[in-house]
Length: 607
Image (cartoon, rainbow, N blue to C red; front, side, top):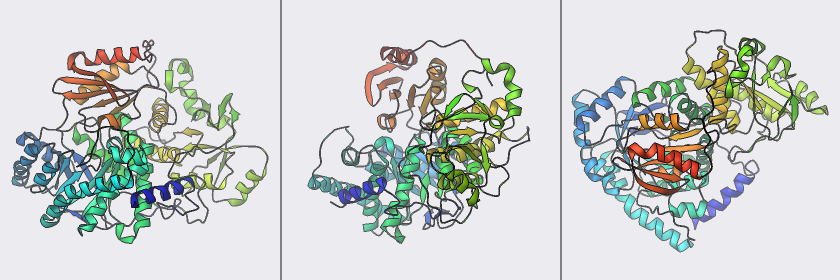
């Protein structure tokens, strides 16, 4: 009954969050880190004011002791502070003893985490050997048959009693051995019970985790952290925000640390951008105590990205009593009025436009017709945009008093973090005015600057604001190279779900459960399908998060058995046990069958 009442209350809160003071952040305009209790993971302290901890996960088969030890040591040498290892069955979990012994024999004290799905007995075995156990409430002792049914309150409570019986022994063991636990909800693997009561929603993700947390607390166990992972940054951000608000409402002693991550982010620039939008926007609001960047690449490449994200956290801001005018818990684009700028429609529900400077426009003007999807659309200096300091109330008052709707932006050179500045502008300016977002208020003139920090900062700042529903156009000025800045602009819009202009991929990072080479396969699928604009394809190494994480995907390529692939349309498996050598071609055929295939166009100039 409690879960049902809580769900109804917070659904009402989502409809009018400010009326009920549902908040996840002390001040949306001034950085302050969320206060959390300290959790101990071996020799590492998480939360409690400690620096943000960087994690990663090895990809080796857990039965291969030497390969696992070598990969753990490699990650530790790269600066990874906690390392996760999959343990899909008890037999796999038993070998964690040997892996741990090998790592410790090499004088490496990095804490180890067992990643558990489906098998409570594997979790119980793993807890004997590693410092932390991750469980997924959606598939730990819970049913996942994609059944649609109505649960009475009595049936719902009976399910919770069954889960308590399965989960309590693990909590007792972890308490006795001094282990930590991560209660890690995944958007793609919510249980049938949660799905039928709360739907495939951030609220369902939060409720799923809180059910397990209450069991731990009843056993006087508090050495745990939460996570709310999703492949869609908007869903992930909303889920974490809602979780923080729920924990605040529960009471001050519910201040558990949070582990941040965008699952199935993919590879290359796209994976880094999507991770920066999800993880970075939360870090910028002071949320997050430990992070993992999930890339479809060798795990060691995740560590420098995660460390760079932590360094990019923008501190400072301004004290203000102004209220936000957007719903932080449910995405809705700001209701600006449509206006014409440089012959293009902007604002309202029109496409988010890509601006550039006059200097950059002139440098690519001779090849604009050949630039394909990365064309600049509007020159900032010719747009009539009004640049202002959002702290100047009199200026904004005059703009609001005028009948004309204007295009507004924040002027460069202000001593304000970018996110804070644009939020302040959105809160004070009438919604009818369109807003041109910038990635930074300090344009770059350094052609030799490292691109990774630029990419992460731009993605964090622009992505955070877009996911708040703020913005009608963007201007990337932290990257000096014209072509690269334009590519970054479009890729950020794509990753934030604001403007889809190319094929979108949901690709999980490899791990010991993976049934094929994810990096090679993902590249083959990109080469075969990369021209299909607006088609979303999921590439999953195994079934653990497959059907659920593919909720937003049109088609899925999922490892079903060694050397065998299952193909999906949405969540539904439609082709089974396809030999891996034929699977990419069969995926193309499946896309054709559903009328989504077009032939690849002629090559255009790359920028």
